[in-house]
Image (cartoon, rainbow, N blue to C red; front, side, top):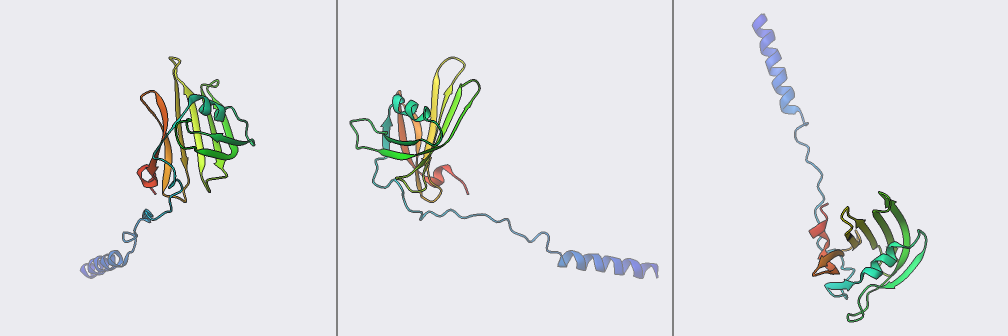
Length: 159
């Protein structure tokens, strides 16, 4: 009788583990949509911007509408219009950030930050991007100039 109970217990545990679905669930992963429309299709791959234009953007209060040509005079114009939706300042103004919702590039947001380092140097970082589109601009420093570099959305973002 003892052996029969052990046998029934082993069979029931085996059947329970075979019928269990706990290990069969797959993790939901979004596949990248490489067919998203391009927002900045008619603009150049690199746009040089001046420090004075970046500072002008950072000095706006929340709620203000802006209209600024970000490209230097030698390039084709890159007119950026929108509303400042967020301004923040931290570490005794050593970090200043602004978020601008674009009105002429549907769905795009321009996030820009100015960081004053301990040695007195200033670093800028920023992006113009939209989650609905397949391209974006990222602010980079090359040869002493600040340049908005066009990139593919999925080069920067993993979904």
